[in-house]
Image (cartoon, rainbow, N blue to C red; front, side, top):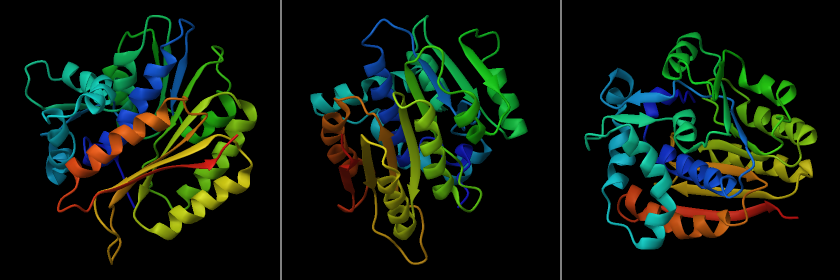
Length: 282
């Protein structure tokens, strides 16, 4: 499948993955020590929901548009607030028009001592990303294949932080590439937090991916999934997943608070499903 960020900005998968991102960042901010985020497939950083790509699919209307003005129970509202704060910061007139991708959400939450390394290989996307962070000394934008960062940029000098891996799935074998890259990265920086997004379209591919992660021997792997529909024939994107290695100790409980509400809000006719489970414990 082809999952270019611009066409799917603000959809149900973005809501889940970016809320998880914001919760990990909130945890890292509990200590004064600086951290670094390495975003391996950063995209352009900011998306016009009424532009050509996002406007063509309209997926954001069943994603962020449903959430941003929803009346949520207080525990759920507390979990999503950092994420929604980042979205509202790009829409200060109160009208939902622009959607921040992972690098922009990260930048919104960073403190003066923190740093972001945003990698993007696609030339025009990398140019737009660099433009969105012009003269921002806390953000380094590099035109680079994100998979290469697993060998050359780890561990970061801060020794604290997060690697965000959100590939577009334009090429075959991305699930295999993700499993292999995680093994390589974890060997270089076993104490880092890793957040790997994946689409749920063909369950057999996901099952093989999880099997490979179990066989890797990497400890502390949390699996987070939400589906808005049941599998279909022919297969189409109906769910979203995130693998988090070395997750904050509060993340499992936060997801168990959040996901039931999102499953109801983002799906129709009671078709939403969610799961939080450990692929590998200690």
